[in-house]
Image (tube, rainbow, N blue to C red):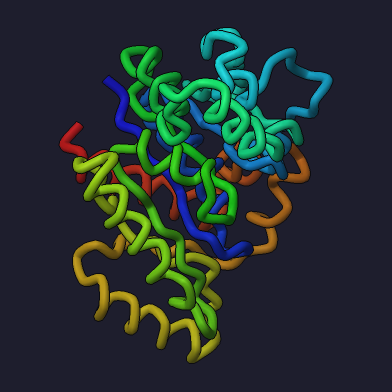
Length: 261
């Protein structure tokens, strides 16, 4: 049965989508059948794997609004053991759709639609990685309810921990009412420029606060890592010898080790 891990941070630009793509690809490379779910209307995880709207028929919006079965929307990518549930701009309308459904049907549970869809395919994969939009709205609540655990990416820059308390409060709220088994998989330090004192100070601050919840792996800030999505490839394909490739392989191994798989 798949473990469902979501990448959540309401701040943009923290390496959330980059990590979603490259963690999923690294898990696939290590022999784990992995599904990447793009739950962001900006669809960067979709385009980052080389797919545009004309390359597929169905998307995640149709899945969580129950217009189609989830298996109809899943794409087998050209990368090892990696599958994609793509997104389009249609997803931007999901909150309006859910509110409308609640008025029409009192039994409709707006926060559980993604969970119900993914439960149908949990036995098909080893891991399901969800790239979440940078907000704490209905779509993100669906992600937290559907997930087994959460990875919180934190960039190694000034004000790095700004807003993390909001994420933690949302996790606590979901744990108390909708998903008591949800846990923090780990806090991931990203975008490290080792030449700066700020980056090193953030590492110390995050590890002091989150302790063993902080991953040992740190993702470096590299030009090649930024270039890879524009070529529609994860970093382990775009530049197999990159330090970022090794970093994401190490992260994937940490995830597997924590899971005991």
